Structure formats: structure tokens, C-alpha cells
Length: 288
Ligand code: ADP
Ligand code: MG
Image (cartoon, rainbow, N blue to C red; front, side):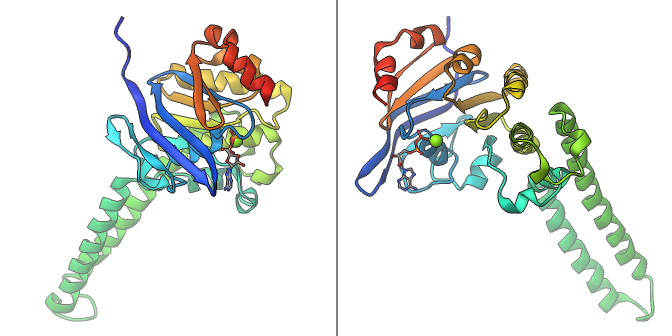
């Protein structure tokens, strides 16, 4: 059986804080289309590794490629544009916006949008130039319709982008059962609903891989099952999932592959059934 191509391949990832080596991972791969769990005791370096891979902490070393392209060294924004996204806890400012506003703020800064912007700037300049130089009279010669048409086009383009974003946001809110809350303040959501919103926001850009750092933390047990269903469904739709979790039942229940981190290094990896009985994994957890 041929090994499937990994979506993420990393080598030599290191990060220190003063004298402490938080991450020292020689090699890491995430297979496309899997749910891969990153586990390990508190302080093992899981969050630091997430920050490094996604470009939010650029003070580490190492090389990694996503979807066949090198992304190490890129900014978080650039990495996200390549399709590798992580969720973020809602900041205080975001909790004071509505659920829908939160979604729209996470909308892609699309290339199309930029091209459109460049096109418009060029067009308005051209229209203005015609008005200034070509118009027979300043009060509205033959060129006025040109700039008016141009402005209409500009509004149309902006609106179609905005409409596409709203449609995508509604589709995701519906999927995560948040549509009834679209006009509520994000701060009024329950812990579990916030996690769903964080996931929904990350999906606005249609990423190929989503990274979740403790998605079940603070979630009412009644909602855990539904969160897990959402994660599994994403995987089934082809989105690769890399997540950090502590609950062993959750990890064993939904992971296709597990990577174990301890003191910054990967000490084991394998299928859930292999990890469950792995001596060094048990030691790492008991030793924590
Ligand atoms: P995990 O997510 O596995 O619990 P972290 O990645 O948060 O672990 O932390 C790994 C180690 O790096 C810990 O010892 C932690 O104290 C340290 N660390 C993380 N972030 C910082 C930071 N910004 N400054 C100093 N030390 C940090
Ligand atoms: Mg952490």
C-alpha cells in the first residue's frame, strides 16, 4: 500500500525561550485527509509548535512545507492564504461584535478582491483623466457617464464580494447551529458555542487544513459530542484536521493518527491502538 502524500512536512523545528528549549522536533508529517492528534503533558510545547507552524511565532528555526510549498518563514497571514489555518480565541473586542460581524471579519482578503481594487483604481484614474482633459464642459460632458458607470461598477464589485462573504458565513453558521444567533453579541454565546464560532471563522477561507488547540476546553459535556461530529465531518469532506486535546477518550475516539510530544520532542506516533499501549507515552503522562 502506497503511503499517502503528507499535506504538511516539517524538519528541524526548534524554539527556545531564554534557556528553555520549548520545541525541538526533528521531523513531523501530517497526512492529508486525516484527523491527527497532537498530545502530550502540559508544557510539552504543543501550542508553541502550532504558533511556529502557522507563522504566528517566527522566532523559531526549521523548514516546513504545506501542500507542496514551503511556508516556513512566512507570516501568519501568508500561511493562512496557503490554506493552513488555526482557530483563535475570541478577543475581548470580538466579543462585543455580533456573530455575523465576527464571521465577516474573518472573510478572506481574496486575491480577486485585490485585483478588483487595482482595476478600480486604474479605472477611476482613467475616468478622472478623461473628465479633466477630454470633457467639452466641466458641468457634465460626454465623459461624465463614464465615471458614473465606473462608480456603479465599483459598488457592484464590492457588493458581490460582500454578498459572497455573507453567503459563506450563513452557510457555516447554519452548519454549526449558530444561525439563530447571527445578530447576538459573540460575548453572549456559551463556551461551546464560542468554540463553534471560532471554528466557523477559521473556515471562512475554505482552508485545506484546520488546526485546533484544545477545542473542547470549557465546553459543556452535552456539546462535546456535537463538536466531535463537526470535526469528523470536516475530515470526511477532505479537510485535514490537526488538533491538540487532553481527553484520552476523545483522542482515541476520533483520531486517525496520534503524535506524542514530551518536553518539546516527539516521543511516539501511531494509530490510536498503538499509542494506547505505548510504554513511553504512559510514562510521559504519568510523569507529568
Ligand atoms: P503546551 O501547549 O504543550 O502545554 P506550550 O507550548 O504552551 O506547551 O509551552 C511549552 C513550554 O514553553 C513551556 O515550558 C512554557 O512555559 C514555555 N513557553 C511557552 N510560551 C512561552 C513564552 N511566550 N515565553 C516563555 N516561555 C514560554
Ligand atoms: Mg497549550
